[in-house]
Amino acid sequence: MDTIASLFAFITTPVSWIIVQFHKVFGAIFGPDTGWAWGLSIVSLVVLIRICLIPLFVKQIKATRNMQALQPKMKAIQERYKSDKQRQSEEMMKLYKETGTNPLSSCLPILAQSPFFFALYHVLSNIASGKPIGAMNQTLVDSAREAKIFGAPIAAKFMDSPEKVEALGATLLDVRIVTAVMIVLMSASQFFTQRQLMMKNVDLSVKTPYMQQQKMLMYIFPVIFAVMGINFPVGVLVYWLTTNVWTMGQQMYVINQNPTPGSKAQDSYLQRLLKSATAHGEIRSRRHKAVVKAIVAKGSDRNENERRFIGALAKAGLAAQADGTVVKSDAAIAEAEGIAAPKRQQPKRQTKAQRQATAQQAKGDETVEETAEESAGEDAQDAKPKTSLEKKPETPAKGGAQGGGRSRASSGGSRQRKGQQRPKHPSSKK
Image (cartoon, rainbow, N blue to C red; front, top):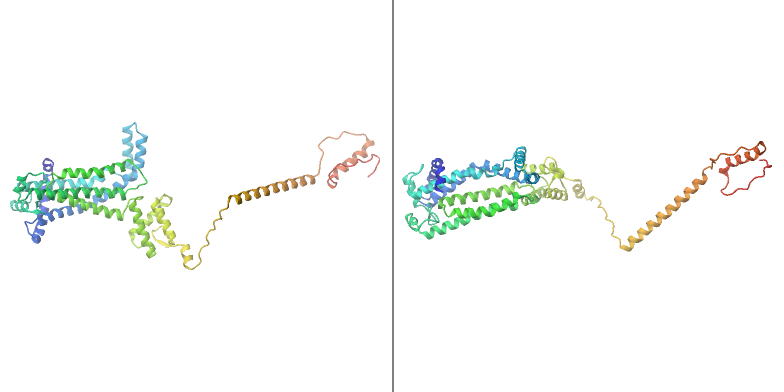
């Protein structure tokens, strides 16, 4: 650890200078040699660094959310090019470029904070050795060596020997108890931070390897911090515990105010927004209007939480508009005037016997209709004039009267009744 810390020796002077400036303020309040003065100086250093890292934290949130949204596409690429790792990497990079996602953005706050962490470790190590460093002269180093937090010097470690602890003016039991409690709190805060991210701010409708990876880190990181914590001075434990608590509170705020779509946090957020909209009959906040506007713009692509939100607004007599506002719907106006919209009557459920009787009756009606259609068809066929398509044989002139009679009989067939007719005598005249 000392070797790594020495790599960041170039930043120890700014870090030590910041601590000295905060020590002047808190030393005037609590006394220059007290643990409160030096401890609060380290806490203030953390707060200042984290404020400066807020833009990187915002990028981390966006990068994490983009990575979660890309997980289905990434999984499809992995399955498609399972046997070609080079093509798989090329497609992944192409996907990152098209969506403007940087996988390393989620690690930016930690990477940016690491130099300050190791610089502080280097400063505290020199304080434990009684050596001036950076902006801290011998007087300030001696004052810091005498400062104790709940009986443990800020430069003491859990693994220090009894002789070294006695040289700092403390007992080994006090150092072990204080450092153990701080290590447990540091690991617990790390676990809770990761857990609320996984349980509340992740789209549970999408199951991807990324989620399993994050779930593993939720248990691995606290163990890593616990193992490394036994080699951290009390001042560094104060630093790391403070930054973990800051991260936890900052993430809690982001989850409550800007949750991931499809997550439990989004459901809770929309429930609060629904309660406010129904109570006041409008969306007041500009940020809330932007949320409603985005939900309306999605249309059929809304997730389950957003569909429930729109449905609950409709039940309350409100309709979300494209500009993010809500207005009273026609159903709500009719209900307010006492003109309730007619409800759709649901058909009563029939018994089995009733259904069979209905089916038999419908079958009988179909039979009657078919019989009527057949009768009508026969009547129409009888009403048509019958024409003979057969060629009549030529007869002598003597039989012309007979032929003429048949011809007249055929032409007048439409006025005769159906059935066999009596033949006429050849000598008869019409």
